[in-house]
Image 1 (cartoon, rainbow, N blue to C red):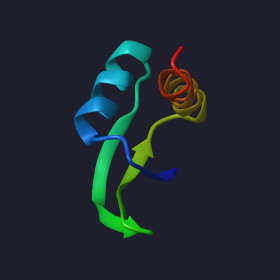
Image 2 (spheres, rainbow, N blue to C red):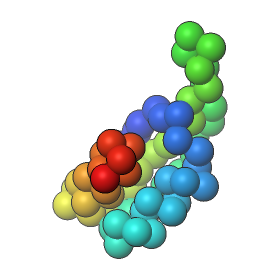
Image 3 (cartoon, rainbow, N blue to C red):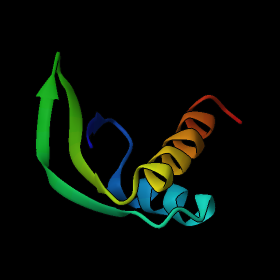
Length: 64
């Protein structure tokens, strides 16, 4: 799964650690959309582990 996010790679690694998900985060590069810098990140792992990470990511960005 590839995501584009404003979240810095260091913060993504912290969220991964807190989630306990067994995934690898691979920075593919940086892009810009409407003046906003985005990181393109490949998330590798089993589907269940990716879902675990994505849920923690959603909660982190929603203030949970």
